[in-house]
Image 1: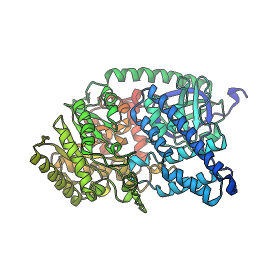
Image 2 (image 1 turned 135 degrees about the vertical axis):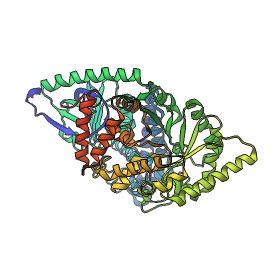
Image 3 (image 1 turned 120 degrees about the vertical axis):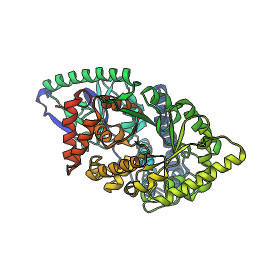
Image 4 (image 1 turned 90 degrees about the vertical axis):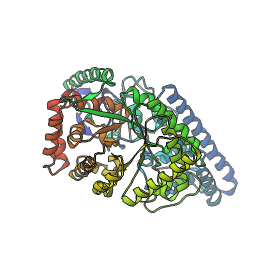
Length: 593
């Protein structure tokens, strides 16, 4: 069929990685395998079936190891390598391997059937996942299991044939899938599921490939070879665009590319509004290997250093020296800028299971996690605090407690910190006596008593990812309800405003380190509400800085005052689109029709 005779239609999703791509669709079959052989076997075939499963495990390990080497060769940030290391750990997990063997041996069933039963049991044990860090990687077990299953039934898993100018369309993409693609031929990604923290989004960002996720049915309504426009800023896919649309988007792509080059040149300049307000923009850090990337993109310090990586994929608790060395490296490199180190923010479901001591909870997201876990496991908490305090001797450091829900938790955490300081003093170990202590405001109860909490801390950091999902009672990782995850919901904006006002009333600063901090459309609102610091991923820093340079504080305050008269998120979003199109179209409106 001639390209012009094909029906033009538009799919709407989540803008996961900015940019514009125009290419031909290549469909990858990454959906869960629902139809697989279920066979009862005889006793004589048990050994053969177990060996067949072991062989599939070894093949899968080799494939993921090769994918890991490819990612390392591309010098992508460490987090993506870590994801594949996690997959390799899962393939050696006795709880999976032994369970499959047991089912084959005891129930006389084939390997595919036994594997599927084991995966369903594991997914049930770990669903729902208790914390945001783990929640964004909940699909790991599924990715690993599906790879095993595909190797068992003989489906192709070790690479994909790419044509020139390909746009990869799939239900979802694992890091291993992505690593096997020829990056020189891939222009963009489009997936049915996913959000801003999904694997596809993370890797697309690091490779600077435009991506739209959460499209729901892209893999079923797009045909191989269809011409596609991937609009990674607006979050749309245009299928079989007209010649005039292609011409228009080619022009926009050139403008966007030129604009990105200018932003990179200006990334290390301070963000100063038109009326002289200096806006501090920091970076979020997950692995020390990311420091150079974050600083090169213009970060003026680390607003959130996540420490969970120290606890995962190991069979013991990190020692004080492990903490100290990890934090010292970052603090020394980032100084004289400040590094805010967040204490452990894992849920008890993952923390205990890493030690081989699984403790099931009915609802981990509301259970033993973050500061609650630390207040229960005080020795482990003190070990981390000693590492942070010792590192503070080598540069500008702050401590931040996650998921504080009330005054009692804060008081207990501060008492333990003081005990830890006294321990170091007695031993003559130096640390920063004036180290600042803050909390994450990410639980609605904390936001509503922010006026009480503010008097007992040195700073607030608003964690919008959890605050929004708790306030609106939705799971942002659930593809069926993630459309309800709305940062511009009036209730969310009121919680943020009250938190900022409460802090400023007692003279302490407020930062924001959730996804909301890294989206330019929210920058005028946040500045209008009085936010002091924005902390975001490396690739958003230059964009946020540039937005701040294009506006003035008085204008932002007027915008904020006006949106607080509005009743719906859509009304606010439409208003902000118009405002930004008027005042900074080259930042946000490059792809708007």
